[in-house]
Length: 286
Image (cartoon, rainbow, N blue to C red; front, side, top):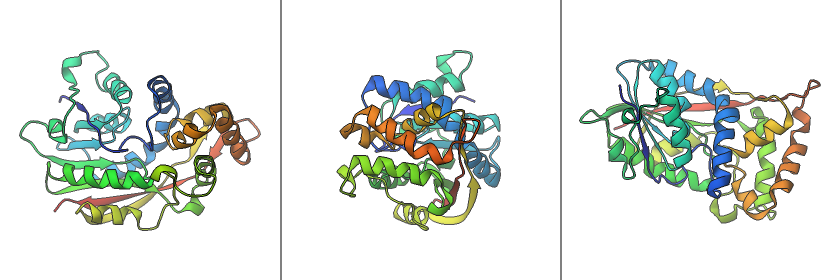
């Protein structure tokens, strides 16, 4: 099995991202994402993989694969995996994870269309887009990406979409409001990339727009837990959901206000714990 990782400019398809920060900052936050934040979504990955029976017969394409943890988990179940992401630094980490012996010939990085991710003549039979829709523009980008990816899949293939659960069951939702307020104090969606509350039918609407047929859904607990407030700030900033705020406000101010918003979730031992419920939708290609 040869993992395939493709660099491709899918609009805002990366891990929870809204805007791309400068390269040095992006590199630092890429490490924070991989080392602190990404593991919070493991229950979401595993629940979807269990539901679909991911294994040796799976040919999986991960849209917005980021630093590759979801791909690694699928590969560990025997799946043949391919990944697409616009962020070169995250793809580099994915390569390190998927080829630990340092054999670059087993990983392909291609600048081009989604077709470059196809594993030879074999079509994909599972497509994943795990990372929650947090920006209005993300929906638009994902719709086009999902439609294009569906054209590389077998008819009836599973497409997994991930999203936030009900706002009242996501403690992190209140913390993320800091990002929206700082990005646009007037309460709008700055540059069209503002955060918005998750709707009950967001995933179903996205599937419909991409020409997919819904075929079941589920909910899973994905608590965000951190060793201390500083780690929580670093982890949350790595999601990309604060990039619009950082573009108009000083980083120290953003970090300060984020730290204050985290106070209700700090435990006596200094750890930070925020319970969340995430949704996933299984859709099918037509």
